[in-house]
Structure formats: structure tokens, C-alpha cells
Amino acid sequence: MCFLHVHQVFVRQLMNIRYTQAKSILSPQRRGFLTAGERPYTHSLSWATGCQLGALYCGAYCYAQMLPNWHFGRQEGEAWGEALIIKENAPELLERQLSRARKRHDMRIFMSPVTDPYQPIERKLRLTRRCLAVFARYDDLDLLLIQTRAPAVLDDLEWIGAIPYAWLGMTIETDRHNLPYGPTKSQVERRLAAVKRAVEFGLSVQIAVSPCLPYSESFAERLLETGAQRIVIDTFAVGDGSRGARTGKSPFAALADYDWRDDEIAVSLYQQLSEFHAAVEWSGAGFAGIAGRR
Image (cartoon, rainbow, N blue to C red):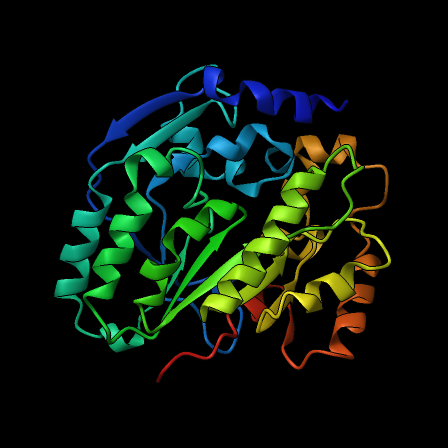
């Protein structure tokens, strides 16, 4: 069994958790990946630095481990997936910033591009849920995208449904479960089922095949069967924010048994899906292409 899959068993024992009082929770987006489309995001929201999922397979290629906030926030010797710095006052900060915002109707918020809002500790702290409760008190924003790879988001369907401008984004990189750098069979099945459940509940849902890993012949069909309103395809070379430079420095680059810089498999999936789905999008422009309310 792959070391990354074995390692996830011990994630809780290895995790160092620290709490901090942040000064701000909404980060303005003026350039980069989230501003690449016709409808760019104005802010991102992350209530933690680091990620409890960093010891799973996705930690091998996660670009967040190379960002300054992690390097300055971690303690000496801490590897990605071994520490989590929690902004415990995130909901209060969000309330303060939204109440003072002069142009809330223009706000398009991505939650979260660097730390999964439904990592395991969320079920204890409910910081994401408390932030959703804040958003529900303000019905005049343009968009909130809640991006996760965790089926635990099903806990909050009613909370998300109470926000008229909310979209749920679910990451599903592949349907293959025999890759040494990919999700397990259980993870794949639970995410596909979570999308179906969220759609049935009445939410607006976007699947993010991000990054696109090698997949089976039936992957496109299985994605379509979920009923997701939008599907975004992304690649390592395009989507890591540095044209593949960050991925090239990641542990994944040594694990991959195919040319991850070649976008061919992603392009092929895009073409297959586009034949049957009207809203299949590409990379950053796709993420920043969700129509808001204005």
C-alpha cells in the first residue's frame, strides 16, 4: 500500500493544533487564479493555515504547502499535514467585515482555496457552520463558493440552502481508486454520492475535477449522473498558479507514473463532458465563471 494511504491513518496523532486571534478573515483577490475569469472572485476565506487533509494523498500535490502563510505560520520541523493554525475568531471577523462592507452586492467569495472548510476538526469546532450562519444574515452578496473534498459537507445542507447566493463545490479528481497518488474507492464513492444528495436537496453544485488525475472510461458518465449544474476541469500545469512550477517541487512529481505536465487527459475529459453538458468549464476561468445575482 502507498505510504500516503498508510500515513492518513496516523493523521490525528501527528497533528499539532494551535489557535490564534486573527485580524481579518476576508482576503481581497486582486490577481491570480481566482481572478482569471469573466466573474472574478473579490475575496477568499480560510479559517485556518495548514490542513488536516495534508497527510492524505492530496497533500502530495497541494500548492498551499508552498504559500507564504504556511511557511511563516508553521514551527520548525513541521511538515505539511502535521500542523493546523486555527483562526478561532473567524465568524466574528466575518460578521464585522460584512457589516462594514460598502459594496456587498459585488462580493464574490471563495471558501476556501487553501484549507478545506470541512476538514475533520470542523465537526468539533463548527467554524464553517458558524460562518455560514453569518452569511445567511446578509442576503445581498453576489456569490459564495464553498469548495471541499469532504462528504462531511452533507451535515450543513440546510445551512448552505439558507444562503441564496451559495454554491457547493466538490472536488473529485478521478474515479480510479488504484492510483498510488489518488483517492480510495470509499472516498470516490462518497463524494459522488454527496454531490447527488446535494443536488437532490436543491443546492447549486459544481464538481471540480481539480487536478485531473488518470481516470476510467466511465468517469465522464459518472460525473454526469450526479446532476451537478457545472463541472470544472483543471490540471497541474494550468491550475497550480505557477504553470506547473509548484507541482514540480512537490512530492507528487516524484510519485507520478505519467507525464502530469501534459494536459491531454484533462482535455479529453473536457471534450467528453461537453458533448452532454452545457456548463463544462476550464481551470481558473471556469472557477471564476459562476453567474452571480447581479
